[in-house]
Length: 210
Image (cartoon, rainbow, N blue to C red; front, side, top):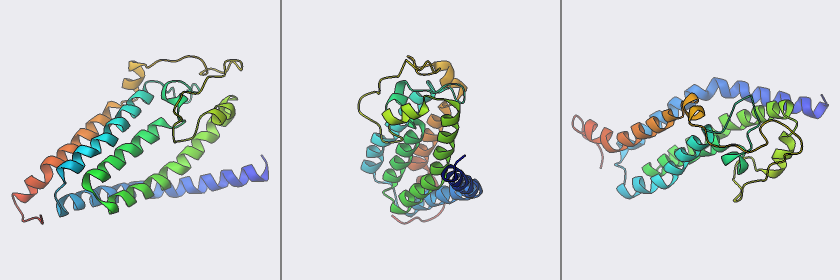
């Protein structure tokens, strides 16, 4: 390992260690701020409706990607992975942005953005280090497919190297169920129910600002 590679490895390891320690507290902070903002002012119906333009594509992208990825077994380069290397994380970001929009809350948006930066940056770096070591075709894949912001057209697969996972692929319902991605849909449903019902329920017992 070169000095540069060792330095990069140490940087990722340190950041991962920090991220693991603050991940749960940051999640509680985001949830507390979400409910505080929800109780502080009523969600605007138009904002809730517009939030679906982010949440539904994010939910679909996560579901679509979960039906392709075979974690630690193959280098997945088909389906949504032909457009972006991290469709699951991109889907999560769209969902989070949608709920920040639903609340019209800059504090929620800032906390979520901070959380994604602190948690996902080291996770992506660690996963890329593993994939680069496990699959010789990964560097070629990186040259053709962006890390996060998707390309409009799917990247063509390099068949010549014979690396597993570089051929054709199709959505697998069994993989979707194996990854339990339906939990994301349940979570989204519960959050929208909280947007619609929590404030009226609390208002039945205490006076809330309009």
